[in-house]
Amino acid sequence: MKRVLGLTVLLISTYIFEFLFLYPGNVVDEISYYKPTSQISVTNTTIYNEDIIHYYKVVKQLKEADFESLEKSIAGNDRNLLEDYSKSIDLLISEININLLFHNFTKFKESNNGLKGIYVNGYYMNKETKMNSIKEILTKTSVNTLVIDAKTDNGHVLFDSQSPETDVLKNERIKYDAASLEELRKIKDLYLIARIVVFQDPLFAKTFTEEAIFDSKNNRIYSQNEQYFLDPSSQRARDYTLSLAIEACQLGFNEIQFDYIRYPDSTYQYMVFKEKNNYLNRTNNINSFLGEAKEALHKEGCLVSADIFGFILTNTEDGGIGQNLETIIESVDFISPMVYPSHYSNGSFGYQYPNNHPYEVVSAALNDGLERGVPEIQLRPFLQGFWHSIADVKENIEAAEDKNLDWLIWNILSMYELDYFTKLES
Image (cartoon, rainbow, N blue to C red; front, side, top):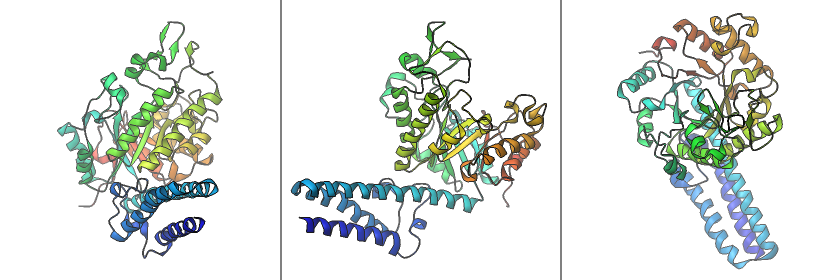
Protein backbone atom coordinates (compact mmCIF):
# COMPACT_ATOMS: atom_id res chain seq x y z
CA MET A 1 0.00 0.00 0.00
CA LYS A 2 2.82 2.39 0.80
CA ARG A 3 4.23 1.65 -2.64
CA VAL A 4 0.90 2.55 -4.30
CA LEU A 5 0.66 5.69 -2.20
CA GLY A 6 4.21 6.62 -3.06
CA LEU A 7 3.57 6.17 -6.78
CA THR A 8 0.45 8.33 -6.56
CA VAL A 9 2.32 11.07 -4.74
CA LEU A 10 5.15 10.87 -7.28
CA LEU A 11 2.73 11.06 -10.21
CA ILE A 12 0.95 14.12 -8.83
CA SER A 13 4.25 15.81 -8.03
CA THR A 14 5.48 15.14 -11.57
CA TYR A 15 2.43 16.70 -13.19
CA ILE A 16 2.59 19.76 -10.94
CA PHE A 17 6.32 20.12 -11.61
CA GLU A 18 5.71 19.89 -15.37
CA PHE A 19 2.86 22.36 -15.17
CA LEU A 20 4.86 24.93 -13.26
CA PHE A 21 8.34 24.55 -14.66
CA LEU A 22 8.49 22.53 -17.89
CA TYR A 23 5.53 23.75 -19.87
CA PRO A 24 6.79 25.79 -22.84
CA GLY A 25 6.10 29.49 -22.63
CA ASN A 26 4.72 31.47 -19.76
CA VAL A 27 1.70 29.63 -18.38
CA VAL A 28 0.25 32.66 -16.69
CA ASP A 29 0.20 34.52 -19.98
CA GLU A 30 -2.40 31.99 -21.15
CA ILE A 31 -4.89 33.02 -18.50
CA SER A 32 -7.22 35.98 -18.94
CA TYR A 33 -6.89 38.68 -16.27
CA TYR A 34 -10.59 39.05 -15.65
CA LYS A 35 -11.54 35.43 -14.84
CA PRO A 36 -8.73 33.93 -12.75
CA THR A 37 -8.72 30.26 -11.88
CA SER A 38 -10.98 29.24 -9.03
CA GLN A 39 -9.81 26.30 -6.95
CA ILE A 40 -8.63 24.40 -10.03
CA SER A 41 -12.19 24.01 -11.29
CA VAL A 42 -11.63 23.84 -15.04
CA THR A 43 -15.18 24.87 -15.90
CA ASN A 44 -14.74 28.15 -14.02
CA THR A 45 -11.60 29.32 -15.80
CA THR A 46 -10.66 30.97 -19.05
CA ILE A 47 -7.63 28.80 -19.65
CA TYR A 48 -7.75 28.42 -23.41
CA ASN A 49 -4.73 26.20 -24.07
CA GLU A 50 -5.79 22.55 -24.29
CA ASP A 51 -2.53 21.25 -22.83
CA ILE A 52 -2.91 23.41 -19.72
CA ILE A 53 -6.50 22.22 -19.32
CA HIS A 54 -5.17 18.67 -19.52
CA TYR A 55 -2.72 19.26 -16.67
CA TYR A 56 -5.43 20.78 -14.52
CA LYS A 57 -7.77 17.87 -15.21
CA VAL A 58 -5.12 15.30 -14.35
CA VAL A 59 -4.25 16.92 -11.04
CA LYS A 60 -7.92 17.36 -10.21
CA GLN A 61 -8.77 13.74 -11.05
CA LEU A 62 -5.85 12.38 -9.08
CA LYS A 63 -6.69 14.62 -6.18
CA GLU A 64 -10.42 13.88 -6.09
CA ALA A 65 -10.91 10.45 -7.68
CA ASP A 66 -7.74 8.50 -6.97
CA PHE A 67 -7.38 9.91 -3.47
CA GLU A 68 -10.96 8.93 -2.78
CA SER A 69 -10.40 5.33 -3.88
CA LEU A 70 -7.15 5.14 -1.94
CA GLU A 71 -8.81 6.42 1.21
CA LYS A 72 -11.20 3.48 1.14
CA SER A 73 -8.40 0.96 1.24
CA ILE A 74 -5.86 2.46 3.65
CA ALA A 75 -5.80 3.30 7.32
CA GLY A 76 -3.58 4.47 10.14
CA ASN A 77 -0.34 6.24 9.30
CA ASP A 78 -0.87 5.71 5.57
CA ARG A 79 -4.17 7.58 5.78
CA ASN A 80 -2.54 10.40 7.74
CA LEU A 81 0.17 10.65 5.10
CA LEU A 82 -2.44 10.82 2.36
CA GLU A 83 -4.38 13.52 4.20
CA ASP A 84 -1.22 15.55 4.77
CA TYR A 85 -0.30 15.33 1.12
CA SER A 86 -3.83 16.23 0.08
CA LYS A 87 -3.58 19.37 2.23
CA SER A 88 -0.23 20.25 0.68
CA ILE A 89 -1.75 19.95 -2.80
CA ASP A 90 -4.62 22.24 -1.74
CA LEU A 91 -2.10 24.76 -0.42
CA LEU A 92 -0.08 24.62 -3.62
CA ILE A 93 -3.19 25.11 -5.73
CA SER A 94 -4.15 28.09 -3.57
CA GLU A 95 -0.70 29.63 -3.96
CA ILE A 96 -0.81 29.13 -7.73
CA ASN A 97 -4.21 30.82 -7.86
CA ILE A 98 -3.07 33.83 -5.81
CA ASN A 99 0.07 34.22 -7.91
CA LEU A 100 -2.06 34.15 -11.05
CA LEU A 101 -4.38 36.79 -9.60
CA PHE A 102 -1.52 39.18 -8.96
CA HIS A 103 0.21 38.36 -12.22
CA ASN A 104 -2.93 39.18 -14.17
CA PHE A 105 -3.52 42.33 -12.14
CA THR A 106 0.04 43.49 -12.79
CA LYS A 107 -0.30 42.61 -16.46
CA PHE A 108 -3.43 44.77 -16.70
CA LYS A 109 -1.66 47.67 -14.99
CA GLU A 110 1.33 47.45 -17.28
CA SER A 111 -0.69 47.21 -20.47
CA ASN A 112 -2.92 50.13 -19.44
CA ASN A 113 -0.34 52.36 -17.77
CA GLY A 114 -1.95 51.90 -14.35
CA LEU A 115 -5.48 51.78 -12.94
CA LYS A 116 -7.46 54.96 -13.57
CA GLY A 117 -10.96 54.65 -12.24
CA ILE A 118 -14.26 56.35 -11.54
CA TYR A 119 -17.14 55.49 -9.24
CA VAL A 120 -20.41 54.53 -10.93
CA ASN A 121 -23.48 54.88 -8.73
CA GLY A 122 -25.04 51.43 -9.04
CA TYR A 123 -28.58 52.78 -9.23
CA TYR A 124 -27.66 54.26 -12.62
CA MET A 125 -26.52 50.99 -14.16
CA ASN A 126 -29.82 50.57 -16.02
CA LYS A 127 -30.21 54.26 -16.87
CA GLU A 128 -29.33 54.69 -20.54
CA THR A 129 -28.56 58.42 -20.46
CA LYS A 130 -26.22 58.17 -17.50
CA MET A 131 -24.48 55.06 -18.80
CA ASN A 132 -23.97 56.71 -22.19
CA SER A 133 -21.98 59.44 -20.45
CA ILE A 134 -19.91 56.79 -18.65
CA LYS A 135 -19.31 54.95 -21.92
CA GLU A 136 -18.17 58.19 -23.56
CA ILE A 137 -15.56 58.61 -20.84
CA LEU A 138 -14.37 55.05 -21.39
CA THR A 139 -14.09 55.42 -25.15
CA LYS A 140 -12.50 58.87 -25.21
CA THR A 141 -10.20 58.90 -22.16
CA SER A 142 -7.64 56.80 -20.32
CA VAL A 143 -10.15 55.71 -17.65
CA ASN A 144 -10.02 51.90 -17.49
CA THR A 145 -11.58 51.01 -14.14
CA LEU A 146 -15.12 51.25 -12.76
CA VAL A 147 -16.18 50.99 -9.12
CA ILE A 148 -19.83 49.91 -9.13
CA ASP A 149 -22.15 49.53 -6.14
CA ALA A 150 -23.14 45.95 -5.36
CA LYS A 151 -24.53 46.73 -1.89
CA THR A 152 -25.33 50.36 -1.17
CA ASP A 153 -25.39 52.76 1.76
CA ASN A 154 -29.17 52.19 1.88
CA GLY A 155 -28.71 48.46 2.38
CA HIS A 156 -29.91 47.66 -1.13
CA VAL A 157 -28.42 44.78 -3.11
CA LEU A 158 -28.25 45.70 -6.79
CA PHE A 159 -27.99 42.22 -8.30
CA ASP A 160 -30.01 39.03 -8.02
CA SER A 161 -28.74 37.45 -4.79
CA GLN A 162 -29.39 34.00 -3.38
CA SER A 163 -28.72 35.12 0.19
CA PRO A 164 -31.63 34.11 2.47
CA GLU A 165 -31.39 37.48 4.26
CA THR A 166 -32.45 39.28 1.10
CA ASP A 167 -35.77 37.41 1.19
CA VAL A 168 -36.38 38.73 4.70
CA LEU A 169 -35.07 42.24 4.08
CA LYS A 170 -36.78 42.66 0.69
CA ASN A 171 -33.75 44.74 -0.21
CA GLU A 172 -33.01 43.71 -3.78
CA ARG A 173 -33.09 46.55 -6.30
CA ILE A 174 -31.71 44.72 -9.32
CA LYS A 175 -29.89 47.07 -11.70
CA TYR A 176 -27.51 44.75 -13.54
CA ASP A 177 -26.39 41.16 -14.05
CA ALA A 178 -23.39 39.26 -15.41
CA ALA A 179 -24.39 40.11 -18.97
CA SER A 180 -24.37 43.81 -18.10
CA LEU A 181 -20.78 43.57 -16.92
CA GLU A 182 -19.77 41.73 -20.07
CA GLU A 183 -21.36 44.47 -22.17
CA LEU A 184 -19.17 47.02 -20.40
CA ARG A 185 -16.11 44.93 -21.17
CA LYS A 186 -16.92 45.08 -24.86
CA ILE A 187 -16.19 48.81 -24.75
CA LYS A 188 -12.54 48.35 -23.77
CA ASP A 189 -10.16 46.40 -21.56
CA LEU A 190 -11.79 47.09 -18.18
CA TYR A 191 -11.08 46.32 -14.53
CA LEU A 192 -14.33 46.11 -12.55
CA ILE A 193 -14.62 46.65 -8.80
CA ALA A 194 -17.74 45.88 -6.75
CA ARG A 195 -18.31 48.31 -3.88
CA ILE A 196 -19.95 46.69 -0.87
CA VAL A 197 -21.00 48.76 2.14
CA VAL A 198 -20.39 46.69 5.25
CA PHE A 199 -21.27 47.98 8.73
CA GLN A 200 -23.64 50.82 7.80
CA ASP A 201 -26.93 49.24 6.83
CA PRO A 202 -30.28 50.75 7.89
CA LEU A 203 -32.39 47.84 6.62
CA PHE A 204 -30.36 45.15 8.33
CA ALA A 205 -30.08 47.17 11.56
CA LYS A 206 -33.82 47.82 11.77
CA THR A 207 -34.76 44.23 10.90
CA PHE A 208 -32.18 42.42 13.02
CA THR A 209 -31.93 44.90 15.87
CA GLU A 210 -29.84 42.56 18.01
CA GLU A 211 -27.03 42.88 15.45
CA ALA A 212 -26.97 46.69 15.56
CA ILE A 213 -25.14 49.06 17.87
CA PHE A 214 -27.49 50.06 20.71
CA ASP A 215 -28.15 53.54 22.12
CA SER A 216 -28.60 53.08 25.86
CA LYS A 217 -29.65 56.69 26.46
CA ASN A 218 -32.58 56.59 24.04
CA ASN A 219 -33.24 52.85 24.41
CA ARG A 220 -33.13 52.10 20.68
CA ILE A 221 -30.66 51.16 18.01
CA TYR A 222 -27.98 53.77 17.50
CA SER A 223 -28.15 56.15 14.55
CA GLN A 224 -25.78 58.88 13.42
CA ASN A 225 -27.23 61.41 10.98
CA GLU A 226 -29.71 58.79 9.76
CA GLN A 227 -26.96 56.22 9.37
CA TYR A 228 -27.45 52.93 11.21
CA PHE A 229 -24.41 50.91 12.15
CA LEU A 230 -24.12 47.18 12.69
CA ASP A 231 -21.90 45.86 15.43
CA PRO A 232 -18.65 44.81 13.69
CA SER A 233 -18.46 41.74 15.92
CA SER A 234 -21.86 40.49 14.73
CA GLN A 235 -21.28 37.12 13.09
CA ARG A 236 -24.60 37.27 11.29
CA ALA A 237 -23.78 40.65 9.75
CA ARG A 238 -20.31 39.49 8.75
CA ASP A 239 -21.57 36.24 7.18
CA TYR A 240 -24.27 38.10 5.26
CA THR A 241 -21.82 40.64 3.86
CA LEU A 242 -19.29 37.99 2.89
CA SER A 243 -21.92 35.91 1.12
CA LEU A 244 -22.87 38.94 -0.98
CA ALA A 245 -19.21 39.63 -1.73
CA ILE A 246 -18.71 36.08 -2.99
CA GLU A 247 -21.80 36.36 -5.19
CA ALA A 248 -20.56 39.67 -6.62
CA CYS A 249 -17.23 38.08 -7.40
CA GLN A 250 -18.94 35.18 -9.16
CA LEU A 251 -20.99 37.70 -11.14
CA GLY A 252 -17.84 38.82 -12.93
CA PHE A 253 -16.09 41.52 -10.91
CA ASN A 254 -12.30 41.53 -10.63
CA GLU A 255 -12.21 42.95 -7.14
CA ILE A 256 -14.40 43.48 -4.09
CA GLN A 257 -14.04 46.82 -2.33
CA PHE A 258 -15.43 47.11 1.20
CA ASP A 259 -16.68 50.53 2.30
CA TYR A 260 -17.90 51.58 5.74
CA ILE A 261 -15.59 48.89 7.04
CA ARG A 262 -15.41 50.67 10.37
CA TYR A 263 -17.03 51.70 13.61
CA PRO A 264 -19.04 54.96 13.77
CA ASP A 265 -16.83 58.05 13.75
CA SER A 266 -18.49 59.35 16.90
CA THR A 267 -17.56 60.00 20.52
CA TYR A 268 -21.15 59.45 21.65
CA GLN A 269 -20.76 57.79 25.04
CA TYR A 270 -24.01 55.82 25.06
CA MET A 271 -23.16 53.42 22.23
CA VAL A 272 -23.37 49.82 23.43
CA PHE A 273 -21.44 47.04 21.68
CA LYS A 274 -21.31 43.28 22.09
CA GLU A 275 -17.68 43.63 23.15
CA LYS A 276 -15.78 46.29 25.08
CA ASN A 277 -15.15 49.26 22.82
CA ASN A 278 -11.36 49.52 22.84
CA TYR A 279 -8.54 49.69 20.31
CA LEU A 280 -7.76 45.97 20.42
CA ASN A 281 -11.34 44.81 19.87
CA ARG A 282 -12.05 47.42 17.21
CA THR A 283 -9.01 46.65 15.08
CA ASN A 284 -9.39 42.91 15.59
CA ASN A 285 -13.01 42.93 14.42
CA ILE A 286 -12.23 44.99 11.33
CA ASN A 287 -9.10 43.07 10.35
CA SER A 288 -10.49 39.61 11.10
CA PHE A 289 -13.43 40.25 8.80
CA LEU A 290 -11.17 41.56 6.04
CA GLY A 291 -8.75 38.67 6.45
CA GLU A 292 -11.52 36.10 6.23
CA ALA A 293 -12.97 37.88 3.21
CA LYS A 294 -9.61 38.03 1.46
CA GLU A 295 -9.05 34.30 1.89
CA ALA A 296 -12.53 33.41 0.62
CA LEU A 297 -12.49 35.86 -2.29
CA HIS A 298 -9.03 34.88 -3.48
CA LYS A 299 -10.40 31.36 -3.91
CA GLU A 300 -13.21 32.78 -6.03
CA GLY A 301 -10.79 34.75 -8.20
CA CYS A 302 -11.17 38.28 -6.79
CA LEU A 303 -8.76 40.68 -5.16
CA VAL A 304 -9.85 42.66 -2.09
CA SER A 305 -9.64 46.31 -1.09
CA ALA A 306 -10.92 48.56 1.68
CA ASP A 307 -11.96 52.20 1.68
CA ILE A 308 -10.49 54.01 4.66
CA PHE A 309 -10.62 57.54 6.01
CA GLY A 310 -7.87 59.73 4.62
CA PHE A 311 -6.69 60.77 8.08
CA ILE A 312 -5.80 57.15 8.85
CA LEU A 313 -2.66 57.69 6.73
CA THR A 314 -1.60 60.25 9.34
CA ASN A 315 -3.18 58.95 12.56
CA THR A 316 -0.99 56.32 14.21
CA GLU A 317 -3.83 54.72 16.20
CA ASP A 318 -7.23 53.73 14.79
CA GLY A 319 -9.11 57.01 15.04
CA GLY A 320 -11.71 55.26 17.20
CA ILE A 321 -13.11 53.47 14.14
CA GLY A 322 -11.01 50.29 14.00
CA GLN A 323 -8.89 51.37 11.02
CA ASN A 324 -5.17 51.23 11.77
CA LEU A 325 -2.88 51.65 8.79
CA GLU A 326 -0.22 49.10 9.72
CA THR A 327 -2.72 46.34 10.47
CA ILE A 328 -5.37 46.95 7.83
CA ILE A 329 -2.81 46.96 5.02
CA GLU A 330 -1.96 43.37 5.99
CA SER A 331 -5.61 42.32 5.77
CA VAL A 332 -6.34 43.41 2.18
CA ASP A 333 -4.65 43.63 -1.20
CA PHE A 334 -5.22 47.39 -1.56
CA ILE A 335 -6.43 50.35 0.45
CA SER A 336 -8.26 53.36 -0.94
CA PRO A 337 -7.86 56.25 1.50
CA MET A 338 -10.41 58.99 0.84
CA VAL A 339 -7.99 61.91 0.68
CA TYR A 340 -10.59 64.52 -0.21
CA PRO A 341 -9.18 68.02 0.47
CA SER A 342 -12.67 69.24 1.44
CA HIS A 343 -12.82 66.71 4.27
CA TYR A 344 -9.71 67.92 6.08
CA SER A 345 -10.17 70.45 8.86
CA ASN A 346 -8.86 73.97 8.56
CA GLY A 347 -5.13 74.09 9.21
CA SER A 348 -4.45 70.52 8.07
CA PHE A 349 -0.98 70.12 6.55
CA GLY A 350 -0.44 73.83 7.18
CA TYR A 351 -3.27 75.04 4.93
CA GLN A 352 -6.02 77.23 6.36
CA TYR A 353 -8.44 76.06 3.66
CA PRO A 354 -7.31 72.61 2.49
CA ASN A 355 -9.94 72.44 -0.25
CA ASN A 356 -8.18 75.33 -1.99
CA HIS A 357 -4.93 73.35 -2.23
CA PRO A 358 -5.83 69.98 -3.78
CA TYR A 359 -2.39 69.04 -5.10
CA GLU A 360 -0.57 69.93 -1.90
CA VAL A 361 -3.08 68.29 0.46
CA VAL A 362 -3.41 65.05 -1.50
CA SER A 363 0.35 64.87 -1.92
CA ALA A 364 0.98 65.41 1.81
CA ALA A 365 -1.60 62.80 2.83
CA LEU A 366 -0.20 60.19 0.46
CA ASN A 367 3.33 60.98 1.63
CA ASP A 368 2.30 60.08 5.17
CA GLY A 369 1.12 56.67 4.01
CA LEU A 370 4.19 55.96 1.91
CA GLU A 371 6.54 57.05 4.68
CA ARG A 372 4.83 54.57 7.02
CA GLY A 373 5.74 51.75 4.68
CA VAL A 374 2.65 51.22 2.55
CA PRO A 375 3.85 49.79 -0.79
CA GLU A 376 2.95 51.90 -3.83
CA ILE A 377 1.04 49.04 -5.43
CA GLN A 378 -1.26 48.76 -2.39
CA LEU A 379 -1.99 52.48 -2.08
CA ARG A 380 -4.78 53.52 -4.45
CA PRO A 381 -6.50 56.70 -3.24
CA PHE A 382 -10.04 57.83 -3.78
CA LEU A 383 -9.77 61.39 -5.10
CA GLN A 384 -12.27 64.24 -4.95
CA GLY A 385 -14.53 64.58 -7.97
CA PHE A 386 -17.00 66.99 -6.35
CA TRP A 387 -16.94 70.63 -5.14
CA HIS A 388 -13.94 71.09 -7.42
CA SER A 389 -13.21 72.76 -10.73
CA ILE A 390 -11.79 70.82 -13.65
CA ALA A 391 -8.35 72.18 -12.78
CA ASP A 392 -8.74 71.07 -9.15
CA VAL A 393 -9.68 67.51 -10.10
CA LYS A 394 -6.72 67.36 -12.46
CA GLU A 395 -4.49 68.45 -9.55
CA ASN A 396 -5.84 65.56 -7.44
CA ILE A 397 -4.92 63.14 -10.21
CA GLU A 398 -1.53 64.75 -10.75
CA ALA A 399 -0.70 64.41 -7.05
CA ALA A 400 -1.38 60.65 -7.18
CA GLU A 401 0.38 60.05 -10.49
CA ASP A 402 3.45 62.00 -9.38
CA LYS A 403 3.85 59.30 -6.73
CA ASN A 404 3.34 56.51 -9.27
CA LEU A 405 -0.01 55.55 -7.74
CA ASP A 406 -3.23 54.27 -9.26
CA TRP A 407 -6.32 56.32 -8.47
CA LEU A 408 -10.12 56.38 -8.32
CA ILE A 409 -12.41 59.42 -8.55
CA TRP A 410 -15.47 59.74 -6.30
CA ASN A 411 -18.63 61.59 -7.25
CA ILE A 412 -21.85 60.32 -5.69
CA LEU A 413 -23.85 61.32 -8.80
CA SER A 414 -21.22 59.91 -11.17
CA MET A 415 -20.93 63.27 -12.92
CA TYR A 416 -17.52 63.61 -14.57
CA GLU A 417 -16.09 65.99 -17.14
CA LEU A 418 -14.12 64.53 -20.02
CA ASP A 419 -11.48 67.17 -19.37
CA TYR A 420 -10.66 65.62 -15.98
CA PHE A 421 -8.86 62.83 -17.78
CA THR A 422 -6.13 62.23 -20.32
CA LYS A 423 -7.70 61.96 -23.76
CA LEU A 424 -7.02 58.96 -25.95
CA GLU A 425 -5.52 59.61 -29.35
CA SER A 426 -8.07 59.32 -32.14
